[in-house]
Structure formats: C-alpha cells, structure tokens
Image (cartoon, rainbow, N blue to C red):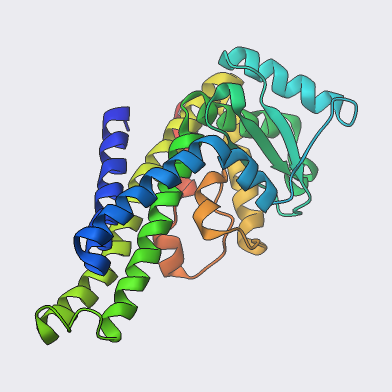
Length: 279
C-alpha cells in the first residue's frame, strides 16, 4: 500500500468521525468531532509510545541485562539505516512483539518474555527485523492514529444509538423515520471504520514482512517465527487491548471464526508463503 492510499484512508476515517458527530449533535457535533480528531492525532503523535508501553507494563532493558540482545538489535538497526530503538521487555508469557513511537528517532521495540524464551536466534532476528521495518516505514505512528480515530468513531456511534433510543433526535427532526436512519447509520459507521482499519493494517503487515526479510538477510527465520508465534497465540492468547492488537507481529487475541475473519492481521499462511517465495 503506498502512502497516498494510506493518507486517503486516514482522511476517510476522519470524515466518518465527523459524520457520526453530526448525527449526535448536528453542526455543533460535527465541529466537536473534528476537534476530537485533531486532539487524538496530536496525543497519538507525541505520546503513543509512552501510552502503549505503560499499558503492557513494559520496562526498558539495559545493556548489562542482556548484552547479546542489544548486539543483535543494534546490528540489525545499522542494516536498516535507523537509530537503535529503545529495547523494552514485558513480562507477558505469550510470545509476541510490537514497535511503537512517532519516528525512527523516538521508537521503542518491545518483546514479550515468551518471545525471548521461545525463539531461536534466527527467528528472533526475523521478528526484530519485521518491527524495524515498521519503524522505517513510520507504520507505528500511522497505526496508532488509525486506532485512535477508529476508537473515537465507535464511541460516537455508541452515543448516537443511545441518543436515538432516548428520543434525542425526535424532538426537533423527522420522527420515527429519522430514528431508524440514525440507528442504522450508527451501526454501519463502526463497521466502515473497522474495514478501513483492516485495509491499512493488513497491507502494512505484508510490507513489514518483506522489509524485515531484507533487513535480516533471510526470510526463513521470520517465516518460522510467525508459525511458532501463531501456534502459541492460538493455544494461549492474552488480553491485549483490541485497539492495540494490530501493533503486535501476530494476532494476540484468540476468538471465534468471526473474530478471526475481522482480524487486523492477514492470514499467517499467506504471510509465510510470501516470505518463502523470497528465498
């Protein structure tokens, strides 16, 4: 996915938010929704890394605690042409990883304790390289802004549904016809936001896989890591916040067929197939 398409999809998300704001409060609601979008974008830009790391109780790792891990990540960062990100560890026993931060100069890479316990060195290099590719592409900022906008749309749609049920639209507009229309649109808006979020997330995962394989110098390590991480996540997922699930290298949530259908991650089988075709 090119940057023009990504920007277009982010504009679509903002437009949906303003539209739902208009449903809730007319012109004033649309203006309020626009201001909310601007505030969310600002907060996401400056504080996304701190917020996400705090959510998962991640702690920055010192060089003395794991010099070999520092050596691996510093070497791959040089190959990627970016500064070495802050290296953080979270005590989650399920293997996974994510990157966050507004740009390569202010990025953090977080590995779970489960990932360090499970992965061999080639697999670890593949996972780290995938996250470094996200940092190079500034996906970490884009995906945080996407999550913030999608979350705001869902919140506004929830407010619109309650306002419709409580008669907030019937006193001064078009009665029952307006009630049905508002109710339908308040249900469709979050679904549209989810589809836009999926379009951004899935395409960027494919791009990060390809970029990570080039940084690591071998796609097989990442392919094997994706298979191992996915197998463990399916057996024992963890309670990742839904709005941050797309940041992880593999889907951290376990769920039904419907939940998997609307996963923010593309199918692992397809990701592995594409990686192995690069060999």
